Image (spheres, rainbow, N blue to C red):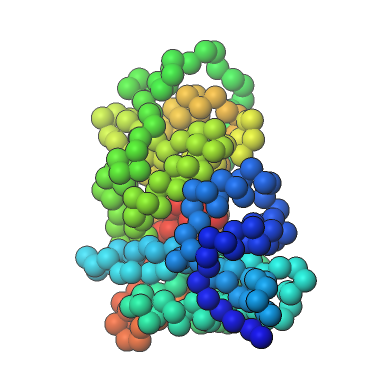
Length: 299
């Protein structure tokens, strides 16, 4: 017998097993996720003969469009146990989740494909290429001398410091423009937990009396990923250099939004897809507008 239902706390051991087999994360991170982020009411499971064989998480987010905050759902951690793959189970689970969200008044579904090769699959499922990012890579030639914690040596007045999720959102929301995804403090708190788990944090940036924010994850001893860096475009390169000195790494991968006035170039790429669940106004209102911006994304 096949069944789909919301998850329960008692399901965690089986979901942990499926996560390990599908995503390859170590036990330490998996335990962290199920302790810090797992919410049964936001997770659907697919069962065959009372055995969970697939899972899907639904994260509530909002899209800022035409001075309105539209409720969306981000589908995350979609996984099918390897022994049950190639049976269309993930598609059935996504279809069920889509109907579930539509019944709750959600206006659209957001997905960040795991690789560029998956975009055609989602486009065939009725999604549209909606979100994009600009990516930069900055590498230091050599490590500078001992730095003052929180301050750049070469850029006067450049300072970064860890902040709370609420403080991060207060700064982030000042940068929100058309087609930006907006997160609740709860989701930013999860990003802060991920960042701290990797050895860094979410930060406020002060450069030339301008305040921005950055969500950073440490990938290895020398490499950092800026899941999000929000500063005025003319200060981004300065900010990267200043933060690079302070965080004491050698390689920095930086994601920033594509501002409406900026041209698409080789540093830009599609990042996420969106399926509207409402006909008419929602589907038509983005025609001719710029790409959206996901920000944190939890990819």
